[in-house]
Image (cartoon, rainbow, N blue to C red; front, top):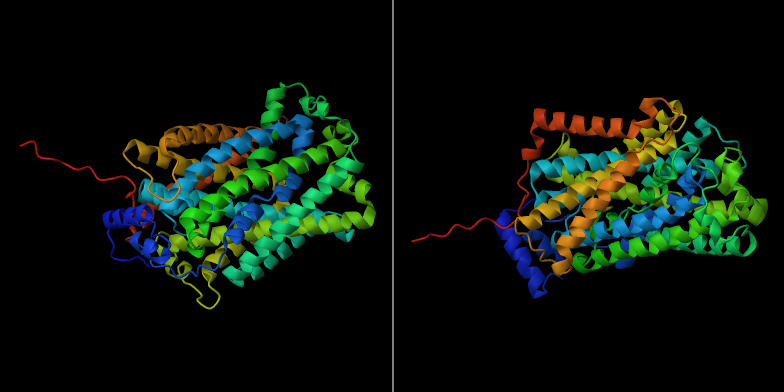
Length: 510
């Protein structure tokens, strides 16, 4: 529920709170920004970091796209992880400044609203909602092959769908239990994933290393008749899919104590700890592949299963697969939490049809139940509809990643525009004189990443398969623009907008 605080007062009071160090009274800071929160600040700093880590999920990110990336560009695809990690750190630094000044639930939507205005924020949130829903479906769907392998069942389109729906249901049960339970499971998922990644990686390097580091510079003919750059750009999907999730730390800003300090820390930790773990996992798997040619030419379409079975035997592989499934469940859980907070934020501001329901809050469980319902139903429909696609997982991951990067860049662009117009970040985390350079670098990186995601990945496939991501993105943006034009929903609500930019003050010449 918004208060009567004007946008100018919200900015001035928020600045004073940050500068005077009295922002530990988090509710007072939030009220100064125009809101009275219904959430409880039950999420610890480590739970907040764990939420971002399990959303980024090194195991899910690598295990989901490893086979595709290795077959597309060979071992050198690992270098894309370092490039994406550096680029996304720039984005995380920009987000850290924004969330430190505007610690409001919903992440990119309220940030874009304060930095630019209502229309820009509405479209940013619209794009991000759809990509999150696709990524929830992708995380649940990606668990299917590993669950079936653990159970010793043959994979098929229908059995994968059934498993994905079960994973989605489990994530929903945990999310509905409330913020504390969400935090506990996020920490458990983080511990299980990190320990599993390190233990499995070390064991593979000690017992299954079949190559030296020199293979990281050899493509093994994966590019075919095309240039290697083309193949590398296509395979970089593994990196662009890997390095997001840090923004989830800010999606739950109203559930964390002292968010102006804790959330920027959690975002940075998510990048460098999650990125290091992902690179280590990828390296250990690459060096454990016996024959790259077999993978590249389609002789082994599930090299991870082959590697784990060879390294741990049937029984040991099942234990490892169990840890992998925990990682997929944690990832789906974190994505669902982020999506529900964003949808709730939309509803609270009256920005979309059904806002009254979406803004409802269960004070007993401390969750927005109807916003969570949307984050259940639409992913379930996407999962069920995947039976008609021969490459459903890659399409869900590609579209979801493109949407994330597009929404990110809308915030990054809004921040750069606001700086040019006079915004001076006043939260507890500031980049100072490096702000413009970091912001510009983040914008350039994001543009290149979006091109990489949209790059055609199947030269011999029909044009509509190669351009699925662009077609789906255009459809989402087009529907959003039409909805804005017809409904004028972005004009609803009295939450402040565009107040990061100081008003122009006119002085008399006389």
